[in-house]
Amino acid sequence: MDAMVRSSKIPIPWENGYVESFNSKMRDGFLNITIFDTMKETIALSKIWMHEYNYIRPHSSLGYAPPAIQAVAV
Image (tube, rainbow, N blue to C red; front, top):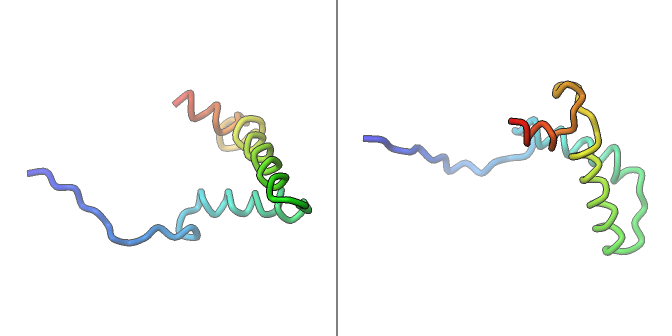
């Protein structure tokens, strides 16, 4: 009999290294250096930053390939 064990524990960002790394990079490379005038501007600039983060920025542990390209290759 196969049974799936489910955890009732809610995920916490600081217990996930990937999430914490992303949060740190977004905070240091975007939020701390940008002044937003409107919510519309905030959303637009956030989308641009996330596109660069996922599709342009090289990552050393991925052989200097962007994360999105590496995800497609897997």
